[in-house]
Image 1 (tube, each protein chain N blue to C red):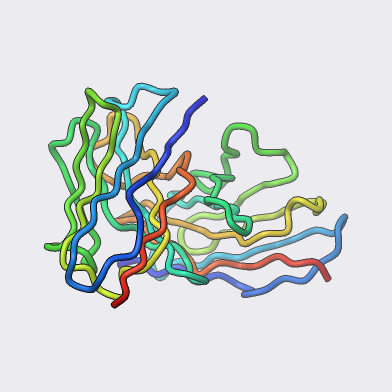
Image 2: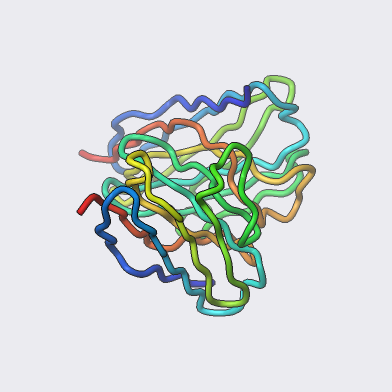
Length: 123
Length: 106
């Protein structure tokens, strides 16, 4: 079955960096766009970034642009999110989610989602 | 950015009742609207896409309707496992989500 498993979360000080990973299985990873979506504790959902199926197109929410980098390794069926210059407001559960088939636009539904990895930015 | 608003914020109902949830967009999103269900401690799950299409494995008691700026998610007969938070999301532009409607037990 289709499965997404995130890892790499933890507690980090403001200004520091963290890299999240999302291991995919059960589908042809290299044919789907992939997204990161986050949810602050007790709050709603916020889209963070998307990468096209081939890695050539990347788009970011304004709140993370210039600080976060999305990437993928199709040979390893893995999605990444490099987060630099972290702020307290980046504290959230980070979910990876599958986007569109052979999509390059980023305008997708999210199905399925991983279970999430928690990032806490605190001194 | 396309802003989505959901109403009501909380819907208190009993099992067996009908639930009607609303989502309104700040500008037309055509039929590019989805609904998700999220239970405590779990990731969201796609229920409805393109306004009215049920995702794989979603029971027939869930239905979606609407186009343009006004959309509705209907749960025809609430089951105990349906008490959760429901989010709408648009993909007409960069994805945005509504703030959610919590369906709780009256």
